[in-house]
Length: 82
View 1 (cartoon, rainbow, N blue to C red):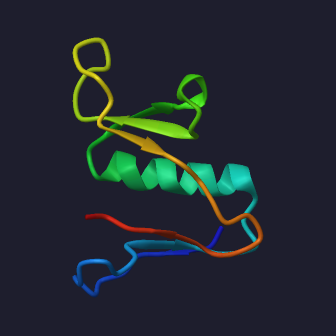
View 2: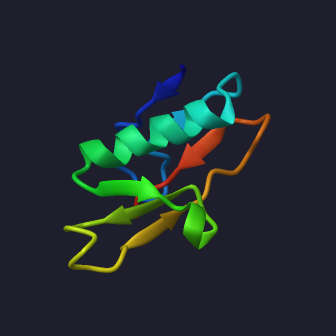
View 3: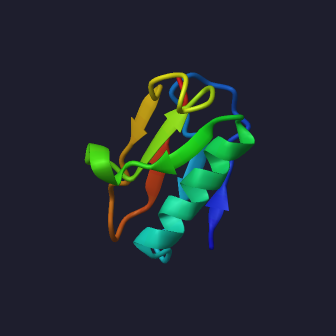
């Protein structure tokens, strides 16, 4: 898999760029691992119409904070943290 993390520290600069040769499943796994390293609890978003949902705490205690969509099949995927 090909992924790189930006160290620019510029708002709006991508923090994760996923290459074009990755399968959709690879992209989902790369993004999932990225958010796990950031401290989120990551679960499937299938029932919510997205690839992943992110929780800051135990999902039985809180609602999800974010839904994650993977877009850009056949093109690099850029992920932004704001």
